[in-house]
Length: 168
Image (tube, rainbow, N blue to C red; front, side, top):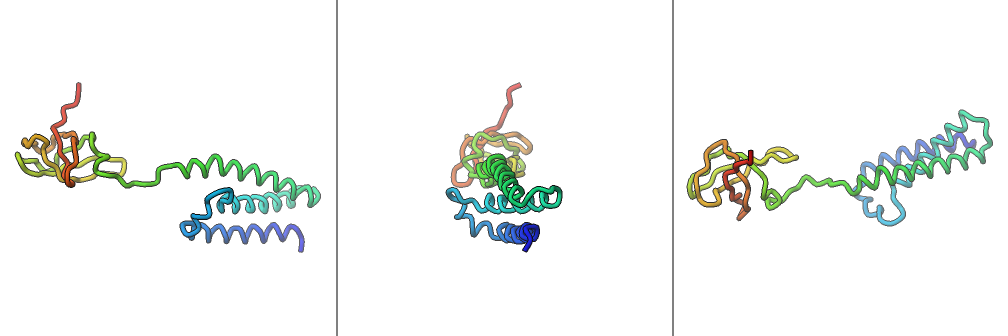
């Protein structure tokens, strides 16, 4: 078998394995610990095969030089992929979840008037969209429709609010 065929078959096989890894990455996620990272390993082998195949087609170098060059280029590309793409992605926030308590201090708008000693509804604009929550006035006073309110506290799923007056 020619080395050209080995590189080409390697590209095809690693491509198929990469597709399977993308589909089942959550099940394999425990393997990401330590030195062995499946994404880096698959990309390394892919880069070796691709670089080797391209160098075989474009140069007249010997097979040994092509293989060594392919390993060096693949090492550099895998290093760059790991440190400039995978590490930043792994530390990025992926959760869109929030806790009601994390909304304390936010400003909302009354969409259902809050009566004295009663409940109304407010809407809060977040990066995830609009959240509609049950609200009561902090000092049991009335708040009209359309007023801006500051969320003071969350008690039992009810947002306790005060009318918000921004500084001018």
